[in-house]
Length: 401
Ligand code: PMP
Image 1 (cartoon, rainbow, N blue to C red):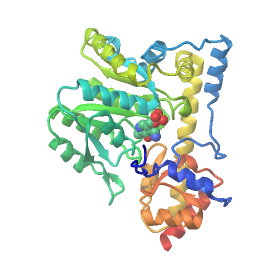
Image 2 (image 1 turned 180 degrees about the horizontal axis):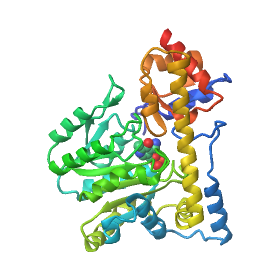
Image 3 (image 1 turned 90 degrees about the vertical axis):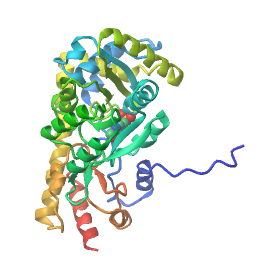
Image 4 (image 1 turned 135 degrees about the vertical axis):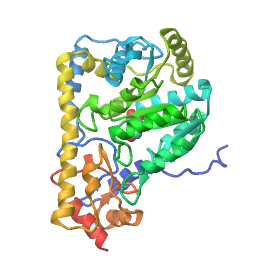
């Protein structure tokens, strides 16, 4: 029956890891993976996560189903983390929120809800470039995917003029996807002033802002600072949608912990939206897994653990920032590598768009055993004091070919 099924292309990001695994050279480096690595290049289980697990395991939790929208205590705490204690819709109990299968699941629930219930448009504008999975994810949700300019190749910075022009030209009521912080793949975020301008344009064009917040705390080390854009929009009176992930900031990748939320006009409207979220989720996966949500809930709800966790998030962010400094200094000062490398330092979060071209990334893989996606994106988390010198020398050599 499946003789007509064509072979699909491999996933562009996961394919990098496969090539890395097959390479036997001891100097090999994997900069494709979007997961944090410690100073020894190893996966990192946060001590606050281990402690949270010990705490709730001691109470021998059952394995019963969670409700359709997940662990209620967890989602309330997730909303507080995203929107902040001052948030008007939070205090008015007008935020509709559900647990989700990490950030991807949150985006997918959001896409499905908007496709079914958002009355003004089916078009969603994504930044160009964006996280590769956004495109099929929103298409499969039933939305019509379009792009707005984001990246300026010539400055390796934000194309703010292009962004403004494209959002101003978008049809009234269209949905716009915004990376709340640590834009993936470029690592380039708008400044607070630029966010204020984007908020004005979104208001003027009556666009619907959908925030993808996959890196809260992971970008700057502060969960409040990284929530600036979301909170600004809410303060400015926008109704927003937010997809949250706890993969990066709690290191809960495989536990699949996230939340999807919408601000609504009243607690009565919220109750209706809640009922429709349940109707969307029930036939998709019935209800979410409990273990990871219990971990996140324990951390967010315990003052000492919460403080410990914020310190650990800052530790991860700071290690990445220090690798940016080191790599910039090696390329600019030590090796005097041709080109301007200031963006390595100014970019934010796990990823850096290096400006390396697809042929250069191929040379790096074949000659130096250094693996990254062909768009020149590297995961800064894959660098450490043992391999950063070798990486900089390899980039230098690849550019001189
Ligand atoms: N959005 C962005 C921008 C991401 O980078 C990622 C992870 N790479 C996600 C969403 C979703 O990740 P997860 O489903 O693991 O939370």
